Length: 379
Image (cartoon, rainbow, N blue to C red; front, side):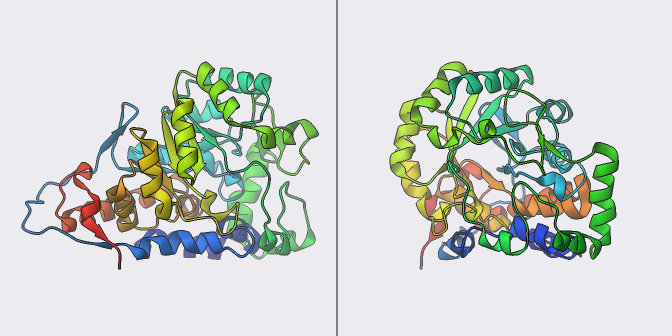
């Protein structure tokens, strides 16, 4: 019985090989930031208004001129093909059916052109190198595919310490190991429904969306020096370079600092996503919800979104009441795709929409834009 997003977590955990579930669930090092994301929502409590006519409640919103059915979207996630057959398409099409934004990760396995054709309006998230020629090639490809929203992730200049993943034998690039093979055999639903099905239909998953070419290396291949280079050289000067070339919406993802929010505004970006990468990069980084008020203050009129720790409708409403325009949900949507494909994703979206609808009414709000900081208090 799936009643909330946490139920998808439990179902996916029983279906997936231990190492693969750990890759999705674990954070870096001690996992302190993963815990901080969840606990940050507990520090706020609601102050509902009463005797309000809530017979009709709406949760639709608009961002960058596009109307959405709900104030949340699906966050970018890499390696989804390991969890479900063509999971990137399941997530994109599920989001389109639910009327919410989907952000395709550069570390996805379905070519972005196919995703845009199947789910027009999807966003693209990139890990951008500090190389103007490669940036220009990528932007040309995005324009050709009719991508309208570019999300530049800035909190992954280098790979983080994933101790728990290494202990389970899971590395990037993926290296075949006896322990992983045994782990897979012990999970026959995943072995047949995802691993074998993917190999027979598509071969070894590739990573075709990092750059200007749709070719892309297999996930088991060691990246070339060229593929690895220059991300650690990406700076605000490159953001300005992208802004001059890119006519669509441009967002920066991975901002936790008010100072960076000011620099982003000066660089001419269109919005920010406050995020600590789901706790997967710098362990001990601040929870996005904790720094959201100061980032909002520094961002001025820029729309600010939040990613990290959203599991219930009440979590989303706390971030929205503080001033976020949209929130993004990652792991639970991947777990939903794992256990149910596109139908599972649509079910997860419906659950969160229902929770938001109910909680809005109980707060005494009939629209998302009625939420205010006054609806919250800290202990």
